[in-house]
Length: 105
Image (cartoon, rainbow, N blue to C red; front, side, top):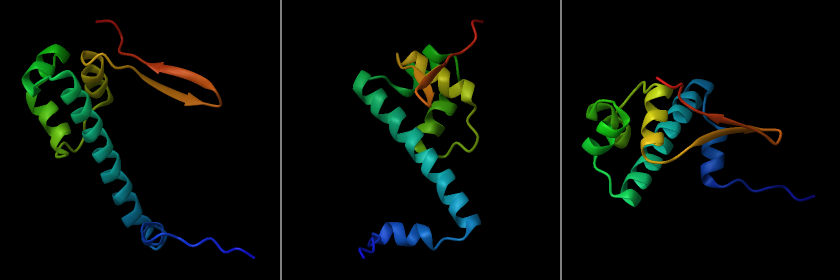
């Protein structure tokens, strides 16, 4: 019988309380958004102010996402930033794809 050995990380996650795990997952999602935004901005050599202007949002929002200090970014703001950077987002489930797009203003 082969018992799967858990990594230190997996063991740590497994032993978290539900409340602590929820907080961890929220922080991890914020980190992912931050890292994604930083990577795309660096690739395109776009500044915070340039992105904010192109997306029609405040530079404070862009900087908050970049730094991970933004607590409640709206999906609309995130989609505006991604669209301004030439990205598109798609939700996929059971081989069905649903593009996330902003309504035309």
